[in-house]
Length: 90
Image (tube, rainbow, N blue to C red):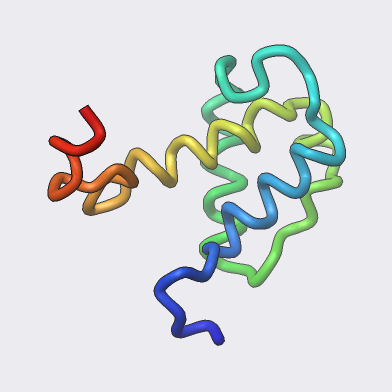
């Protein structure tokens, strides 16, 4: 059910599956990709259902895929570890 509050957004699902298959390298989420590649990938997700992550541009800059995941979490209106639960987490 796409209306479920627990469903994983397509951008995260696609990127994490791709990283698990092609990007198990040191620092995959620590190192940043090339900014122009990250924006290109973001635009593709915004304008297409599921972009082809096996394009050379993304295979050669695998870190841009991890960077897009981090960007998604940074731009959430409410953090993943919500403000309401912050005290319990700390």
